[in-house]
Image (cartoon, rainbow, N blue to C red; front, side):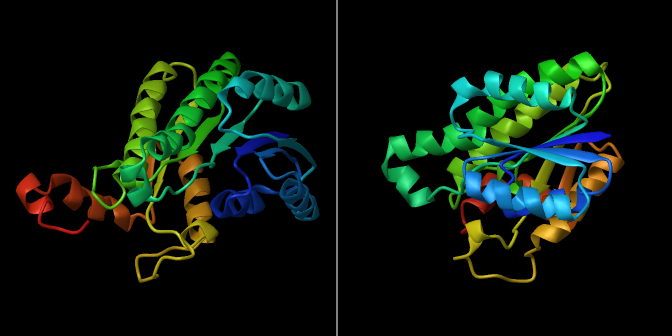
Length: 245
């Protein structure tokens, strides 16, 4: 029996990943804000072969609920083999520049709520000395850029946190996976003009499963984003400031 918990399962990438993992012998814990959507996803995974599915309606931005939430999950399944953190929002950069409250709210959801959950989950999984903690960050966290530096700063903070957590758990057998997608065609990016660099949620889901199987520490999805971000990361500052990135 493989026990899988997906936090923010109503996101397109998380749903696609869960669909690929749904088979005989898998039990899911699905966490998200919308109880109705959770029930729809539950039925979908059961039809695809999942042995059992537990749902936990919860606002993951509320850090005070995290310990009780994880305790309830553990009471349902006993231990966790794979955990995927996929919740978050894409903030309006211009609004964040104008309003420090908007900025701090975006950072709360995209960074601090992840760090809080990871702290609780790491303590649980370290006791079982196995499993995977997989977290969707972003290529935006590699370097601050004027087009999305609030979102990028939050994702970059999570990536650094994961690096330290990986070091902490290195002797326990727990895999800590940092998933860095590029442009993904999801409802969150519906208003963006699409081009050849865009991937589908299903493409990203397949990459996530492959990275878990290979026990990677960091994966860029699709993989060509590693090359793109290597170039952006090493652009001299005076060149970077002349771009519209």
